[in-house]
Image (cartoon, rainbow, N blue to C red; front, side):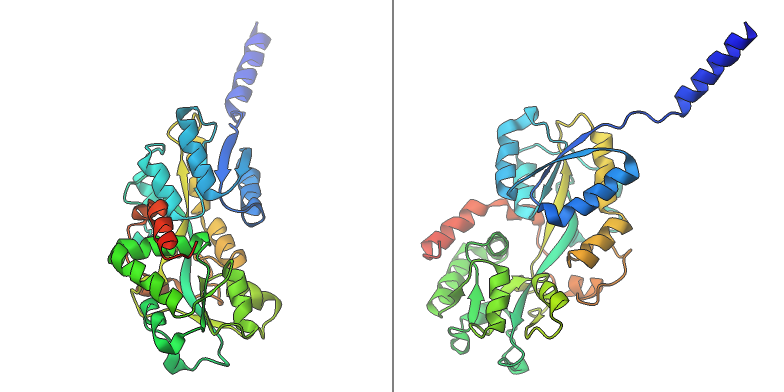
Length: 331
């Protein structure tokens, strides 16, 4: 009898000590696989939680989530831009995040709705040729680029998602009328159309254009393979909408049955290890200060100084932006 009791006690002790089987998570990711797979793999290794990832276009996944509603198998949504996060939020599909998630985060990285949070940031900049552009020609504002002296010298990518998010921010900050005037002014001033950011940066190096409107992380990728690559980049004046800091956001679905594990994933993306990966390997801006500064990027405080203060949840009206671009005959 005593042996049986001892054996039973040992069994109970073993069961209590054994970790519970970790739930699998399903992540809908608008971020590219090559960019985020390493950090997802690290989360799985650290926690034992398996993450099943469905990769796709950020906007298309947002539409899919709205179509699936409460039937969605997704526990998490990782969107490439704030507009998509705002759209899902407005559809009522996201769970409220604990207040401590936002502790210490600057306002440019938080959601007013409290149901999603930035995992990393990327700033809009103007790239330029240091060989053909003097410091006196640096534009103070993105609105300056419609001036005659920039005629035929500026590249842009109207079909690119990050550019369209920037135009949405311009609409929020300055209204549709002024945004429409800027789009038409750029068009009439001979802005050169490229398909994306990468081709703009290459176009500057090749002498096709002198300036480009791009995200901050493209040039560092060129410099990583060629330290003499003949392009530099800078911010517009402090607070100019041309310095928009857009974000990749992470959220937990209200319909998830695995909210605790999903929150663990959110917290991991905000951890020093993940933030160091985003800035060191992807050349994006961290959302916290607990990282080693990437020398290819402006420092954390400088970014906060130059960025416009925009409610990221207001960037959800992509259709209105597409209509303006169509009216300007840019799509």
